[in-house]
Image (cartoon, rainbow, N blue to C red):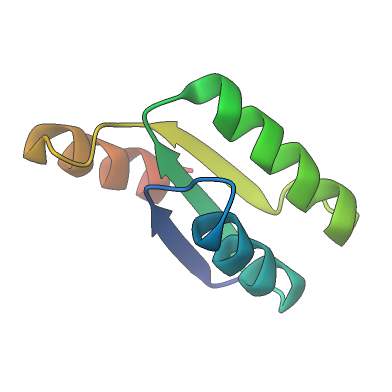
Amino acid sequence: MSKPTCVVIGVGPGLGLAFASEFANNKYRVALVSRDKNKLQEYAKQIQTSTSDASSTIIVAADASKPEDIKSAFAQIRAE
């Protein structure tokens, strides 16, 4: 059985990362969506370290103000 997935759009160092970490620590796979892929990679490493699970995160660079980016992001998340 696969883990449920939580999508957090607009992940930053504050609430977004806190929400994502909480879900990851409660056995969810977390999709992190934000514009800056480098920062997303940093956030993913933090979550993976705290959960000891390299497969606990999916990162997707997308601009939440662009509907086509969000549509593409969800397609990528579903594919993974």
